[in-house]
Image 1: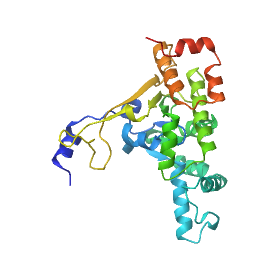
Image 2: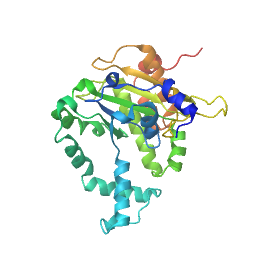
Image 3: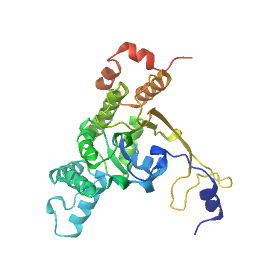
Length: 294
């Protein structure tokens, strides 16, 4: 049963949410990118209208297959694997890939799609390379999704916070895979900043800065604790994100936005030769984009 405070909160407190195409219930695709441990699940739950979307998450399939293997005679090759063991995670990842689960499930999802009421879908990806999007886009376009309704949102989290998150969550990724996923997401998004969008994606491009200090919940005035909904989710008053591109529009020349975004990237991605080379590819560009000292 709802407490009186929860009732008031859910009725009258307005949560800040990202609205894709003004909150349409049909025809929206969101590629939600981010390295391992970046908090994409948290972002879906707290920053988006989750109830309007189907979520395609490879991790959910891995959990389901392990449970099936452990409780039946099916798939003995993955029986007893643990998603807390990085080596086991690699084995189950290969198992899902070899079975072609991603491709088969997408074909099933799109098989009977009606253009007028095509489901909203979030694709939970790392975007460590362009194929994370490029392999899927042709099927979406063929099914009738409008390029202006195909969006990209990057969940950018400080790499060292993501490492901590990785150790605490149910599925633990090996250190080298962790690094590659964050390097790859950063370099892929850097190409987007330079104007190289995946062909067929002409919706919005947004970046969520998903560090702890960037999410501000409503606070119970009596207990001074963050308020939650009846489902147990944080009631979010504010969080930090920027819109780099609007639906159906080209990437604009707004230098303040680009400078802010490049500052976020420089402060949060892993400090490796690859990311240093990436940020140093165009010195003039970097000088223009980096935050100015005051």
